[in-house]
Amino acid sequence: RGDTVRPFKTGAARMAIEAGVPIVPVGIAGSDEAMPAKSWWIRPGPLRFEVGQPIIVTGYTFEQRDVLSTTLQRAVQELKIRAASSLS
Image (tube, rainbow, N blue to C red):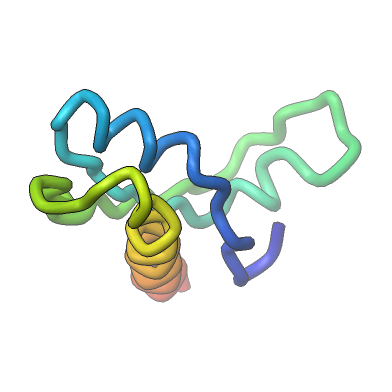
């Protein structure tokens, strides 16, 4: 929650490496207001999605899954910031 994207676990990176498919990062802004923490209710409000360029996983090995996860996390963080700036 908030402006910061927490570090990612490596599952998505591992699956993408094993499958040989790219990962498409997506940043979302406005979701904190639409569904506050510990709430079961969704509130109406603007959401903004920013879709990034696919991250090609060719060349990454299973041992580099941490590097790929960090790359993905940084891309999502940048996209979330961009999405939030367009909501303001």
